[in-house]
Image 1 (tube, rainbow, N blue to C red):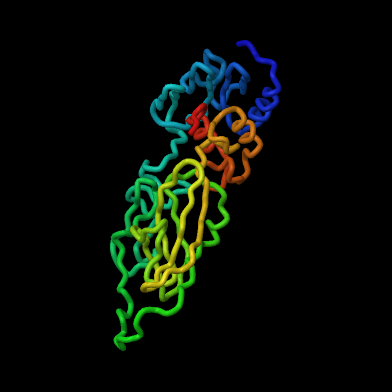
Image 2 (spheres, helix red, strand yellow):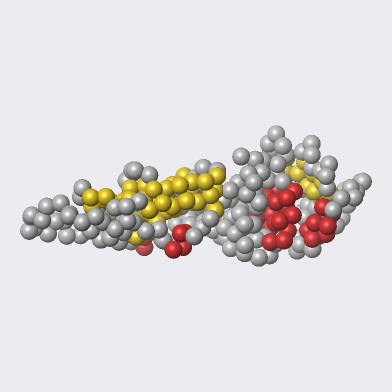
Length: 291
């Protein structure tokens, strides 16, 4: 095998320091060749002749076995086992997932702030509360009169835990925050459809994100009065796109190597607060893709 003498080989040395036998990645511009993994040396010298990812521009051989079956595309093929399978929809609650299939992590409508109903899980591994109900609490309380509110309601807020997020890798994102008790509804981009209210002072809505920048206009409605608008923005990155240039390539790999073993969200593609082999397998699966 011929080694290409390029500066990118310095990055290869960093990959060799990873705690697993990753295998060989090569292209017309660079090559990374870790030594045999945890298996006995095979005829190809890399410890596992079956774990191979190929395309016309690169090759990966290793023993990390991140996928089940043989995923293929026009740009790559992966043949590996199920030792480290990890994905939404496998029926198991993995790190970073709220739920998966029938596994709701012991959650119920009551634990989500509702009075009754049936909690379920979406195909994006997020809770679905549309079948949860509340008692309505107080229903008008007599007294009539009063008419429509005369003051403008306060604008809805976005919860602190997501307010400062610049980006995410997920396609289905839970927006949530607070509202005034008297507010009748919250609209997201002009619609109150699918907005739910776990309590009298909170709201949430699961929204689909497009790749790139996503903006949401949030307005509180109280009778005929509307609040000022709260704007929430978040960028959806392609999984593997550490540099946020909408392409997964060797630049992302070089940056990913520097994040290995930490918790930096830039390299945490499954958002489980750890940059590890799960994330590496996700990057490899999307190598060469762009949006």
